[in-house]
Length: 115
Image (cartoon, rainbow, N blue to C red; front, side, top):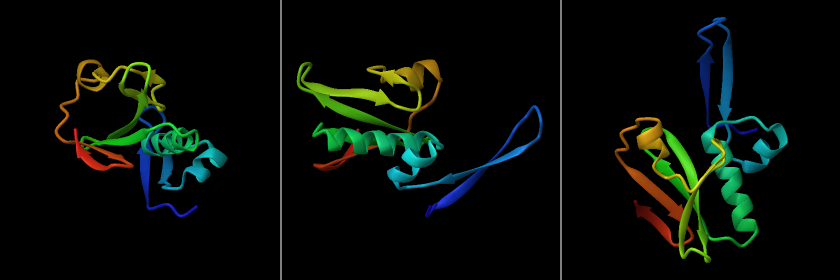
């Protein structure tokens, strides 16, 4: 599948190891239905763009990715996290997960932006 790298997760309960190959090809995720936030955000962004929606891939350097989709009805980009099944809850990482976001970049058809 052309994985760029593979992460290994060790279960705390049973000590079993699970491999997570990190695929950059959204078609692979749609075939295997197995991935993490990056794979799901990649596939969701691809689907949005295929539907002619203005979507941007957002990368947080504390290790999470999500998508923002421009909705003309509200005249703004709306947060969508396909991995968490979350929509329009951009503060969930800082308030819900207690993450300290350090650096966030968004990638769109307009280029790269420092959010």
